[in-house]
Image 1 (cartoon, rainbow, N blue to C red):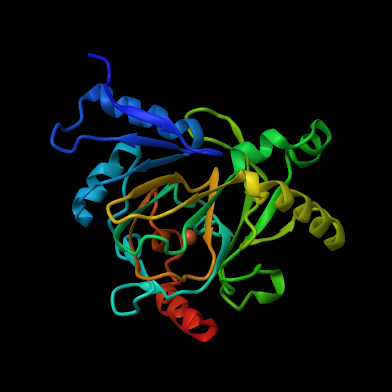
Image 2: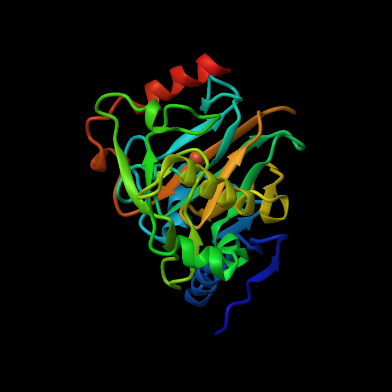
Length: 283
Ligand SMILES: [Fe+2]
């Protein structure tokens, strides 16, 4: 039986699907959800009631969910319930500075005030499509250095690195899992430099790519309502937010990927403690 899932296109990208929680999902529904997710790398479902366990189960449709400490957490501007406070987070993919960053992230709105700061998503898939043939020829085959987070509201540069910090080399043009479609993978937060270019040339090229990636017409702002779930491709789609204003904003986070962060970078057990300190320093 074909899937009966109703969906509509969001602007400028993303798919919103309607699910009837009481009916459950058939195998065809699950295939359809994976197909819709792959189209733009961003899926929105509204009106859910999800425990952390239920969110993990649902997200496992899209890949292996990571259940270890550090991969599920609560993001909140109420410091008693979650991390990251109210600081601005400029565009990024999560943990690009380990060899295998998360494949996808998912946020579920446990409690939000309508009108609170949205999560902003920028599409690397659309950005690559918008490059000129000359720009594509220039970036294809290049690699970048991705720095560990030392600054959350600005760019991390080589000079921000501290002894024992991890960094990773990533392709400037990635390929979407399952479809092979190219996407730009140069996040503003962690991309320190393009390898093989003089610093000024690297900076100029990054600025050119950021201008395409973060053009207003390449950004989907998700306006949160309690019960929303957003799942996005952490590599092909970047995320960020302006400083949090407008009320309560408590989101439950799940990550999908092959390897947990600390499996890839076991010496960095203090990351979340450090991140909390960093946020309280800048907030
Ligand atoms: Fe993030």
